[in-house]
Image 1 (cartoon, rainbow, N blue to C red):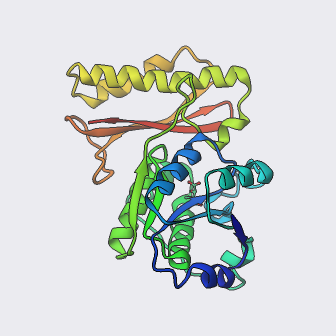
Image 2: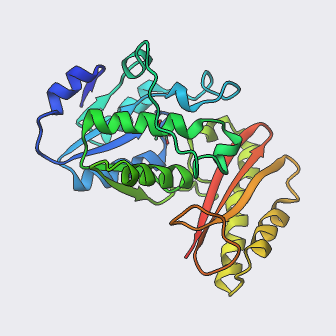
Amino acid sequence: MEILRNIKELKNKIGLNKNSIGLIPTMGALHKGHLSLLENARKENEILVASLFVNPKQFGPNEDFEEYPRDFKKDLSFFSDSKVDYLFLPDDSEIYPDGFSTYVNNNLEGRNFEGEFRNNHFDGVLTVVAKLINIINPKRIYFGEKDAQQLFLVKKMISDLNFNVLLRSVKTVRESNGLACSSRNSYLSSNETNDAANIYKSLCVVSDSWKNGEENFSVLKEKFITNLEHIKNIKIQYVETVDPDTFNTVERGRKAILIVAVLLGDIRLIDNIILD
Ligand code: PAF
């Protein structure tokens, strides 16, 4: 695996390559979810490029940019064990040089749910993903289903702005207790990890009820809330059912994603379950 820190160097290596390139954008602190993205990408691309960049522009002023977990040594061995060919490891000024002022904004679907609780978060995500696509020119780009709204918005950006890349979504990977793998899980104490496992349990209760014929999403959302009521430390930020094709809220039917965000103490966790 070759590590490349600047855009020119990277472009020189892969710029003229006509073989298929798969790109896995990451912010490091790799976990089993990332490994699954890398594994999927390795299977169908000749060249595998991963990026590791903790993108300051997707963190709000009161968020955890400084504390965001960073374990470079471990990440490096994960990337290399996953047979990544090139790791793009830019610093902030490589991506956002002095005078940088152009952003990708989605002022519709990007302002709800996560966008409501994390001001400008998706402007930062979409801007960096657009830059990475333009720099690396991959044939395929990989995202996890856990960040359902991010996945939707990247898909929308690719379509709205005619980016020439295929988006691949990969199933959420879970710990043995059901908790969705996330870099932020490392903030949780073992008691909090046990509490957090109830998020997925409650999603499964909802899914079972939906499979048994319950089509009223208000009833399902209420079920999710009731199932978490006994966990003192949990505060629900939102529970919503959205149409996977539009990310508009839907009230009933046979196709939706139930998306949730909860605070466990001051640790924010998101998850979802597909009702289809
Ligand atoms: O999902 C993430 O880790 C980040 O939002 C991404 C896509 C790497 C952009 O910084």
